[in-house]
Length: 451
Image (cartoon, rainbow, N blue to C red; front, side, top):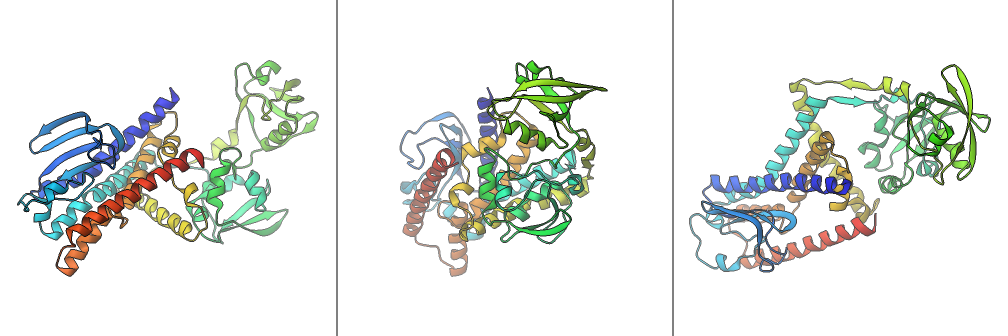
């Protein structure tokens, strides 16, 4: 069931993005009187072979356009009359240009048609971020919440951090939110560093330029930095059914104060004690109301006993910031375009060799994991908004077969005052599609086998 929910979210999100992207091309073409022969979500052929397995799951002819849902669940397309596109219909282009065809229109009109999908994706992304900002506002932990320092995972230890360190600033600047510790200013900046306080002394911790890569790896097992500050006040929350904790008699609301007679102050100390006693029994000293009790519990091979912690002090520290519609328009727009700027910075790190391409790109598997196995509308729209901006950015790249490739040829035509030869366009389209297919195959392989 969880997998079905994940797949449903991916299909819905991509259908919205691809559908509106292609609608951008469609509506721009119709405005200039260009005939659109097909409008398809997904491909009705085995991409990139337009003459193989031609059939649609659903189609309907309306006016000059055939609307349909293809069987090959990847992207989608509009077939604009008189244009070299995914269908590679060279026979139609061999005929004399007709007034309703793409190639018969002025270059500036064709440029707008090619930019139509990108523009719609940008508008969609901005609108989503504006609405999310207005509806949800901001809820965050201030940096001051980590008054007892941070909890450090294995990667943090490797670069010199220790549990209990207090991060004073990032790249020499103070920070407002706790999650700024793993913000793009840290992950996508070369030579980033923390200034920390340890035992009353200030120390500079230089962060590796490939930190993003390691953070992704360690999320599978142990995090680089806990997403919550170090906590001293914790109580037992939900006790897992049939767990060792339940068998030992642990109850919701209990406070664990010692393990095997050794006093614990912080929750991470409890985690460490349990990890030291995997597959063993431990004696827990707990405070239940005003009564101190001792319970004996077995520990799993993962160093757990089976309960969820609750941090009362932490919950009180969360700050909520609401925004007016006018504020949301400005903040949402900045956040939307911030996605593009972050992608540019990420590409910069890839080109500089600071992070590997295979671990930085994500395909349908990665996208599915990001959407998650539980349906959360805020997360769904946040991710869909981000993907809309990414789709606009990727389509603007000057790669043949992408919108950006067509834009380059149109700009050449406008500057040189003559179109590029049709043979050049045809070869460029073929090369572009081969490159895209190879890239998609690599991304899918990396998604499954390299992550």
